[in-house]
Length: 253
Image 1: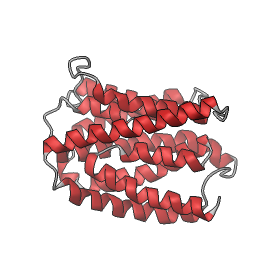
Image 2: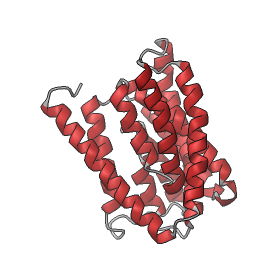
Image 3: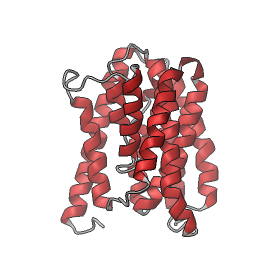
Image 4: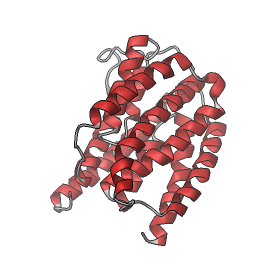
């Protein structure tokens, strides 16, 4: 890996952690795409899992007083079940397929609320949330907009939404580390960034998370949802354009 690519990963770790610190998602989607530009597909899953595990864990710790732990516990159960099922499925998208999946996922934020009536504060649906979100995370690499669908109908405040979603994503990304990390480590880490990139990116992402928390306090609940939808739409459009380019130029592998 070139020094420029390594420093790019570190810089994006800070920027995307800050965005997730404000909106509770979107940053992970941006980071996954950034990694896909400089790493092999399988390595993006593991690297993204490690960095997002730390970023979400730190965000949950910073806002722990706002976490709805009942939702987290049931999500975690669904997450373990999803990982157990996906461990037996040999599914890894091509780079073009990865960008296509990542580009389609943000479109879920435009679904009319009446179309999908789910609520993560309900026990059965919290379990379903963990099952679905982790399953998508293990195939597309990101599932923030799907997670958001389960939270849009809850009565939680923006601080509770950000904190609870961060805590749930700790389990979702842990499953990604386990499922994709085992074969990569067995192959002596082929395609992964060098260890010092993780050593730099992890504390940098923690700083980004803290910075995002400061910005979160300055947003109203209305602006929080408005800006989140706009950011996700732009990211999705960029990824769909990249997928189309890879397919058309025959570089989709």
